[in-house]
Image (cartoon, rainbow, N blue to C red; front, side):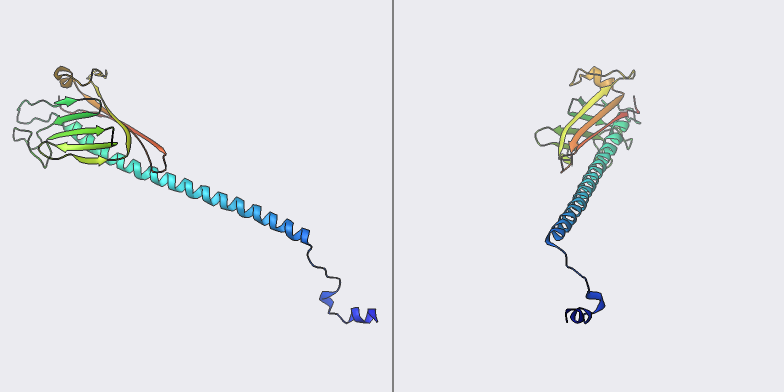
Length: 200
């Protein structure tokens, strides 16, 4: 009778047993470990991507600032009319001022093109500003930890007694801009450039 009952079952159910509780627990633990590893990898990848993106954006802003400073420093002392003005009326560690006669009218008072420009770093606010004579200062970079200007003569020697006196300012042949900051994720960013003055 028992044999007949066993034979009456479908073929695919004969001798079949279910999963034990231990096997189920082991499977869940293995699955949990795999999910944790995958999740950790995805989280780290996302963090790395955001860090790289923020650094790229920050450096793009720094390059724009460097381009502006480079243009003004290279043009400092441009004097086609022979007016004889001072190229660098001020030269300090965190501020400098330069002049140029870009339109050749004999003075350095014009804006558009800007002919009398000052750069100032405010350590309290972390802001680098650019001001044109007669106008208000415009913040061109925020969130900086430090910004310094260094000056060099025609031999490449540092003019280190800053703020520079009139004699040393007349000897400036290159300006070095060094910027240090950090992204929103507190990744450090450092950038520096040395710009040669074209006009003696």
